[in-house]
Amino acid sequence: MVNLTINGLPVQAPESATILEAAALVNIHIPTICFLKDINEIGACRVCVVEIEGVDKLASACNNRVREGMVVLTNSPRVRQTRRTNVELILSEHDCFCATCVRSGNCALQKVANDLGILELPYERRPAPTKWDHSFPLFRDAAKCIKCMRCIQVCDKIQGLNIWDLVGTGSRTTVDVSFSRKITDADCALCGQCITHCPVGALRERDDTQRMFQAIANPKKITVIQIAPAVRAAWGEALGLPREKATVKRLVAALRKIGFDYVFDTTFSADLTIMEEGHEFLERLAGRNDHPWPMFTSCCPGWVRFIKSQYPDMTENLSTAKSPQQMFGAVAKTYYAQLLGANPADIFSVSIMPCVAKKSEAELPTMNDAEAAQDVDLVLTTREIVRMIRAEKIDVKSLEEEEFDSPLGVGTGAGVIFGATGGVMEAALRSAYYLVTKKNPEADAFRDVRGMDGWKEATFDIAGIPVRVAVVSGLANTRRLMEHVRSGKSSYDFVEVMACPGGCVGGGGQPIWDGEELASTRADVLYGLDKVDNLRFSHENPSVLKAYESFFGKPLGHKCHELLHTDHHA
Ligand code: HC1
Ligand code: SF4
Image 1 (tube, rainbow, N blue to C red):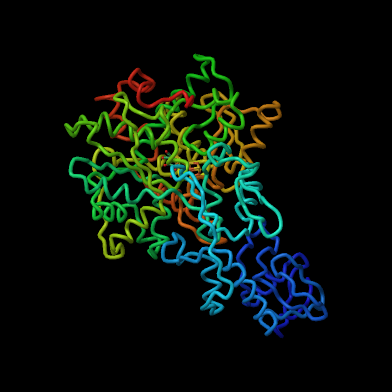
Image 2 (cartoon, rainbow, N blue to C red):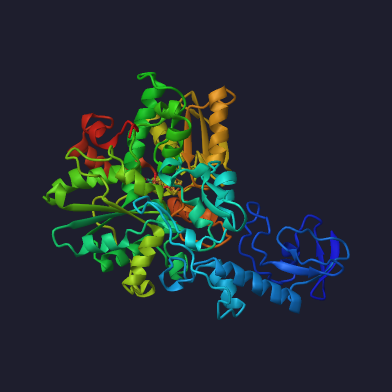
């Protein structure tokens, strides 16, 4: 421990602490913009400057460590003036049209400028408008970029993809797609982690809310919406709802208020995915087809984009099962259209996802049903549905909970935990055990694959067969695992991969809490829901069993192959 004083207060801090961390110990808050713990500690924005007695230059608090006897001032006149000038300089390069910015009210720059009482822009300069492909699901507005480098570092360190880089020199230095590529040629996985780690509105998803409102207003369209597992753990955050009020049933009520015709649950098709993928795994295990090992899950489109661009020779290892989002869309336009007596072409199939990559997955040419219509017509992120709720001025706090529609609103706890890292694996093992032994395991028997570790391994005994599994999240971890698998250093039967750290709960389409990682808290919500669910096994989902009985036939049967599987070749 070292002893120092900050603003006259004595502080004891660990030797490894930064000035920023030491100040927090005595409730002194130093503002930051570019700082991201363990990811971006470069002191680039110089908003966190402090004065250290005996040192000429002001120092950035985020990356300078404490020393014995240090005397620090965080708000001396010199610090105050310099901090203000530094923020004014950042604003001079920023498009400050807050009224039309998606991050207004949730922007680190806006907050710091407001807090400092900056009411005029002494160096105003209008940044050049962005040239960008507006059809791409990820949107970058160069005029809003403040060159904090967070996107570069997150993509590099956490996702191992290096999509962004500094380009140009001197005063023309800016951030752009690396190696002078267009974003559409850059192997971006579309995980959206750069969006959730951007402090301002320079990165966002393509906004599809206005297209959605048009479809709702079209009397010829029957809107059928599905809610992804991880959305239920996060949708209320940005609306100020306490967790106990932010239930999925209250979201169902809000969606009906907006005007969606039928509100369903992706957990239904998560259970359907387990039936298909579980049978597929057992087929591969029995050697009844000649796929290479290990089998990889296929439900995360960020991961599927990653393997296709980084390890194209290993795409055959992917399960052929479509993701729950896509299975749901296919079911909506076939089985459900039939139940409704509706023309599939009149069904407008929508999903709410914690994810940006889901927008591109829905657009893949392979993701269409037998009648050549897309399975899913439009994907909204959690943030977009929150914006729609706000636009409609729906007072979610006063809404009573409402039930999902039937029959595609029935899901199990196994489907709910899909939204957290390890959840797909756990759900699959629960059912694989049953399919092999005809007995249910204890529902929590495979809990060893839970938790936020980026790379987990376990071996489970299923009727005398040792099944070696791995669960990985975050694409840099995934790359390490892939190298191990390729070189033979690690050997598994079944691997779950989620592109976003912690799984979909930490997805790139989720509400943004600057500098905070909420994946773990949201995962706890999902495991809590699973624990109290009456149904915890996908193979016991009555709506799924009924769908097989009356429409799909057997798992992996002809109709299933046609509608619920894909070769991942698009
Ligand atoms: Fe996910 Fe999935 S869990 S991929 O993270 O398999 O997006 O929540 O909907 O499709 O079910 C996302 C979440 C989601 C699919 C399921
Ligand atoms: Fe999307 Fe989930 Fe994959 Fe992230 S982990 S890219 S949110 S599917």
